[in-house]
Image (tube, rainbow, N blue to C red):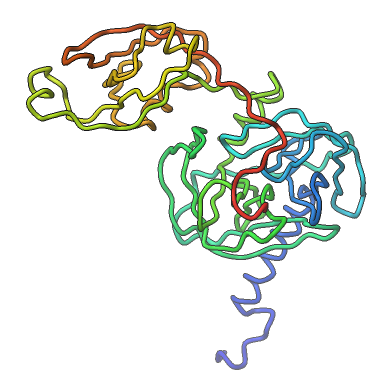
Length: 320
């Protein structure tokens, strides 16, 4: 049979189109509209029965939040269980939100895979099609949140789409989309990251973040000093400010100290410091090594918990 005589129903493109539409329909059952700000609603995902995941930056109020489910069930009351600004995630509990998403494995995504961003910025489900443009290993957001895998997307995150699901061609949810973490592009938070944050918020109402109360920036040592001290590199993190009474102050850190290791790992940038301050370090002693007055000095710092930011603040781009 020639290409011109092939029936439309047998066309590979028609089959792909039908498969994508079915994927949107499947994921759309678990995609909700969240009414927690002025203007257009934002999107969320029923992660498990009664639990909805949203983008933190789209939840502008703490009370009076409602959601619209698939099928137009409107104004169901939602309670804010907690939020984690560092990963741009918030968790709501909603009685009656029972159609949970079918979760897939984000680790199976490769560059070039077709994916869909599904949203519900109103009563009806909407979608955009694109590809996974880049993948990578674990990374830290600008606010210090730990993300298990980089998933950069070549698709549009329209107004109201942040908090909605990233969907693979089989209709499985493989992440949560946000425009609030990376400038000039869309990323998705993988399933493993979202599930971890959901569990922590449901258990404690927040995600604890380690805190030293220090203002720091990278600095380069003179080569001769680095050699005389036996340092592995010539870059450390200089302390520019010490919060009075904070964990660093209590541990003996002084302005002008240069941190070269924390928790047994090299400290060459502020991102290295953030990486050493995971939720499990709060309240625990952490070994620190600094250069002070040209000599190495060992300190023990008891990690504090980062003060909670105001809940209603917005960060990110465009309020999407």
